[in-house]
Length: 375
Image (cartoon, rainbow, N blue to C red; front, top):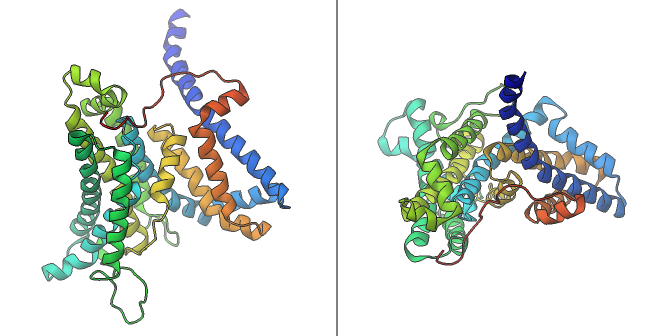
């Protein structure tokens, strides 16, 4: 009997830790939903009808589920990018720019490589190459910031914001110039369509959900494995918690900072690559506006845990996908969804408010989001 209790104790500890980690985010979401409902009532709407429309638009049919998964895919990649940087004590606000860089270079390989080579490539070469190039360029874009942080002490928040401007304006220049689709019917800034051999196939006929969604779930597991089961993951977490102690223990802190930003940028670049190869089949200016910034909220809501990132991504995807149905039923503006997202972020980021409201004691260590200039 005693041995049976002992064997159950690890399971109970795991369940307890999951419960403790998810309690505050759940209450933050609940509080934001209730406040959102009160605001809808205040402006003359029906909150129950609004949330009914939100659920119907997100999960009410096979097509709705497919579209929610499509929305969730880039959120998972971008959320993992921000969360991985958090684990290393870095605040990567540059996911938006890294995603755009990854998307534009993935599109370039997708449509231009066969023309450069003079022959068509098989899908098992062209598709992985297009995805890898986009992922790599996103990683290099972020590694520049990591190197500046490691060797000059330049703050990654400032540098990633500036790199966002450079990336987005450079992308705009390319899409309006040398990479613009020259078709007579095209009048907007976008690349030509990528080749068939660079496209991710759909999982089900008639639905837009593609294999990039499965890849996103696989990558989430790999990031969990990296952080918890490898030496590099231990070094990233140690540097994130205390770089001075990590240095004393023999960890190369500068190298770890650069690698952390490189991997973070590769995940963001992967988000852009998958959107190009699996969904849009080209890069179009403005297609990804908001993914990189929403990823910050997703990483916070998911407590920087890969499973939490997946769940938070589905929440944000459901709100984005269900907003149209909510607007149709209630005639309320879609901006309400952004308001609810902002409330969720407010309560998750300032979790002391939630703990005070519901009288919850703080447990466990907090994730170090960023360190001071030169830290």
